[in-house]
Image 1 (cartoon, helix red, strand yellow):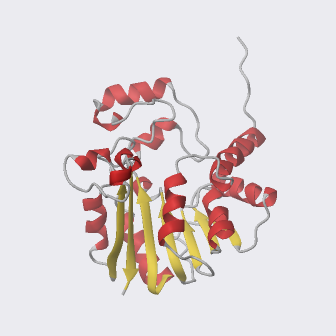
Image 2 (image 1 turned 60 degrees about the vertical axis):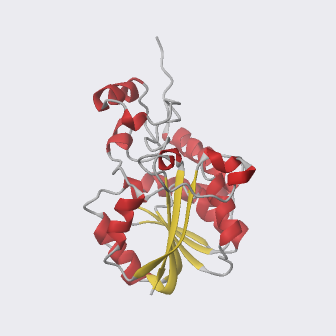
Image 3 (image 1 turned 45 degrees about the vertical axis):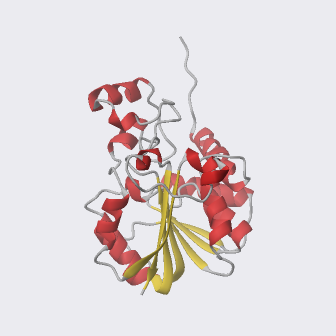
Length: 260
């Protein structure tokens, strides 16, 4: 039985196709993020650090649709390779990409806005205090905005596995059983990991945990929105469902902090 060999260039093209969903407004998991940014925030002419920019679709989208001046950083060299290829295909002013570990090599630049879009839940807990301290104290301007979006651990899509196992709340299954299910469908992702590694490295982020990490920093919470499928009903269009048990319906949590 023959198998199809996936080449390096195939992976680059797959990455570009994935990024194009965001860049070209073709749907995808960042549609809510984009609507929220357009409705509630003014990034026109603002300098933005897209921390954990991945393959770059959101960085270029923010430059094109919000008028932002964006520097995208990611620790994964494979992600940045795709981002460079994407930028070559869709040349855009005011966008740069760099592969960077900010703990080992901090960035000597201040920004009006720092965005962690689907990033905070992937960072090792031991690294989070150091990374947030650097971002806030070194890279965020006074009065600047720190923006988080992530699927909270209580919610239906926290496992990040819906693309291969389209079942909500998978994280509440017996872990051995779930890991075996993922392993049977395992595949290499665009970055450094396969799906099993991607699931196991999740830090089970929740709003309570994030607020605990933010306590020592010179910031104040400014905006919060918790999105659920109930928000598709007109009556609840602008309602955030923070309380128990409704918090288990939250598909995406958005929160911003303003530097004092």
